[in-house]
Amino acid sequence: MTLTLRTRTVLIAALVIVGIGLASSSSARPIEQIRKTGTLVVATEGQFAPFNYFEGAKLTGFEIDIAEALAAKMGLKVEWKTFGFDALLTGLQQDRWDMVIASHGITEERAKAVTFADPHYCSGGVIVAKTDAIRSAKDLAGKVVAVQTGTTYLDNVKKVPGLKDVKNFPQDNNARAALMTGRVDAWVVDKFVAKAALQTDPKSGLKIGDFLFIERIAPAVAKGNTGLAQALSQALAAILADGSYAKISQRWFKEDIRCK
Ligand code: ARG
Image 1 (cartoon, rainbow, N blue to C red):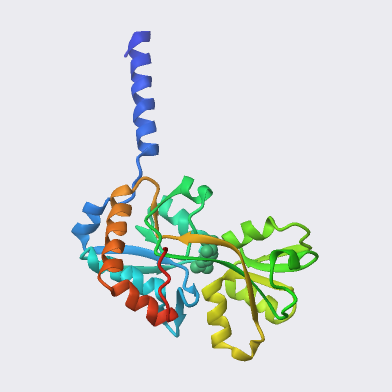
Image 2: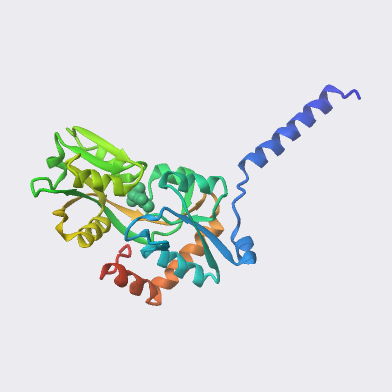
């Protein structure tokens, strides 16, 4: 078959346009489709007590309860998946799950790759050490600090002037263990994670110092899945208003950790 140059040009242009369309159209499940199946597929890490962790074989924590409450408001059940922290946001882009809830702080960088719903709590990274002499950013000069890989703790610790070294670990538990065994001078982690660690192990001698930074923590969905993000934000507004958020927060923290 012989085609005129013009026809060929038009055909190629059409193919290119279809190709771009396929590449950029997100395969993420829209809320309508999720509603049809009745199940929201949610991924978390399961290694970040008291937010998401395992008690024996049972996945539990503040974020598990919050996600269950959000889903219930949306008339959905949750199907849980647990994966390494660094796989969670990329899994959204690959459409492996509908939502991630794993204490992700909203950052400009992450917002380029995913869409955040409204924040489900506000907190920040604190400096934890085994001595009162290391409490604030200036005390970190010349010190070695442990953080979990891929976190805002790492980003913010890197900015501290005069630091000797930052050691990063695939799991936050390993960063804490590094401090416990004296391999590092400090650990930077969420304030509530630090408090829970101290509560679980009162003899650990951990001293919780100042906030290094504060952040807004939110569930994430695939970039551009705004229908789902909006439905989640609406469900959050509903549980904030009807007292169920307050109840869950009191249960885990004896205080209300909503963003004010
Ligand atoms: N809030 C920090 C961040 O945004 C740490 C989150 C760590 N979460 C976890 N499930 N280990 O990066």
